[in-house]
Amino acid sequence: MASTDIGIDLGTANIIITLGNKGIVVNEPSVVAYDKKKQCVLAVGDEAYKMLGRTPEYIVAVKPLKDGVVSDNEMTEAMLIAFIKKVIGRIVKPRIILCVPSSVTDVERRAVVEAALSAGARKVYLIEEPIAALIGAGVDISKPNGTMVVDIGGGTVDIAVVSFNGIVKSASLKLAGNRFDSAIVKGVTQKYKILIGEKTAENAKKEIANVFEPTGKKITVKGRHLIKGLPESVEISDKDIYDFLIDEVTEIVDKIKGVFEQTPPELVGDILTSGIILTGGGALLKGLPELISKTLGAPCYVADDPIECVAKGVQKAFKHADELLDGFEKISLYRYK
Image 1: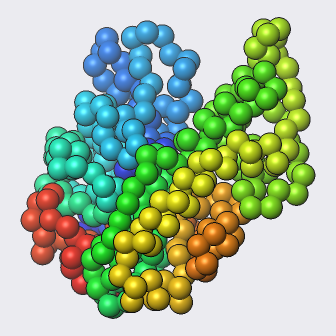
Image 2: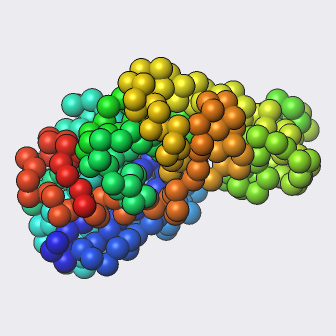
């Protein structure tokens, strides 16, 4: 592996970058602030995130990815260029492996590859998120045993059954961490007539959410009363958040069940033994493993360091990059050790 090889988990919420053998060197929000007058990037990542909703008209602070894929080519390219310069410190032409959801179309794949090539990459390879997640979690996917992974990111949920270096069955939902936050905002608005921000909702989710057995834990949130128009605070409980999130969580569980129904019975037997692996930031939602296990009858557990699992898998995949065609070969078909 060359010292300038870059692995990128280009997520809807966060971008995680690995460099050579150094491991993870960037883990920041997927946000770019761009000055339209000067036609230049002002900030990326953490600095740009602070500018969301706070900039004059000629400065745009945007999230250029939606539901796990590129929604704004120009801003994605600008963000990648800025991060590559930030990571390497000079203009070189690195090899880049990019992570994409398993359900992306050829058009969406091409958009990601072109953005990376425009950002100065010498070669670009793609790896599907479920494969990268399993490799990062330390699973040997070369064996003919069925392993199920559920990667819950900011924009998508990727579900896949992997065996013998390949994806046997997979499904994807454009529903994940961001939808959880939006559901909490909507729920508080409808029940308490108070409008809260998504950052407040995300904090409440992290602090007290439990989608299996709410215990009555409470937190105070602040927002604007919709009728009075004045600032107001209200105390919400984990039972409230359970009610706000249960529809979204049930949709994920039903999708996992659907993948089970299409999976060969021999592999289902393997999964009942080895369990379902949860990765991504959404895997940290309290009570989710227990709910999935109880509903589906298969053991379920969260991988070590679930947020960085995919990025670690991307880094490990570099040893096989020279065997692949630029950008459009499934790296999942090759052997990993």
